[in-house]
Image 1 (spheres, rainbow over the protein chains, first blue to last red):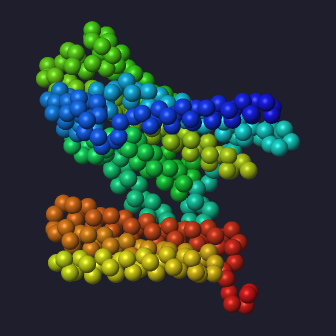
Image 2 (image 1 turned 45 degrees about the vertical axis):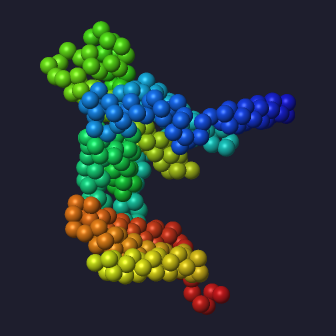
Image 3 (image 1 turned 120 degrees about the vertical axis):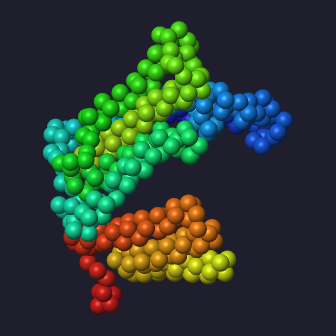
Length: 254
Length: 99
């Protein structure tokens, strides 16, 4: 065991040194002569509106020029969510003496435990606005406003979590942990499926312009971006809810 | 207009500083919550109102007013629920006798 730890420490030290040496060789961040500033940035700034139909070129870079990268990020979030849920659920299955503990039954919300009419009214007032704002961040994301799938997913998850916290697991506006895991998978699938669709239409993976719709290329790009943003939103929202659900159950057992 | 905005901003600063002092100096959970809940709410509201006045009347100041509305809604209710939860779970309020 000690040997393994010493080995791990050695690997960490060596990697740190290598990364620091590597970071030292990178060009300075605001250096106008660096390769990133001389070729790529100008292209994004000058051409992204006409090439992708997205007024926000952060969205254009994330969802179009570097669509592969974002697919990877979405998959990472999904995988991390799965891993967290698996760890939390297996940790609660056996207590300290190795006795199996059943999963917690439907938990009570705050409203039943120590709530008042103040809390109930406030939650009822806030939840619709939070949901609306989440959808607005998603829909407005590509159209020149800040926003996009990741933020929208987080905001929508907050709406569900408020409802779940206040009204308990029996809340009408709720997504159960199991359903959330399935939805996270579906979200990731939607993203990848958009890519596969463009493959089927004879283009490259995530080459939106190839879609056989009667639109201009920019509109097709915009449509493709919307498609993958919806996938990202679903994935992020459902992953956050699944992790929250696993944590809440763990609390209720102990 | 700028003077009104400055007055609002600095009174907002004042209340936030007082609230932070209260959180550090007060003796127990309830009194600290009292400082954070009341002082911060008024402080942030004045602060953001000051920004809205400075900005003049347009869409951005409408958004700022919405922020004020939601802070007014969320902060006191958070304090209310927290103190209620603490009291229900048996935390005794601080009194001078207990010293």
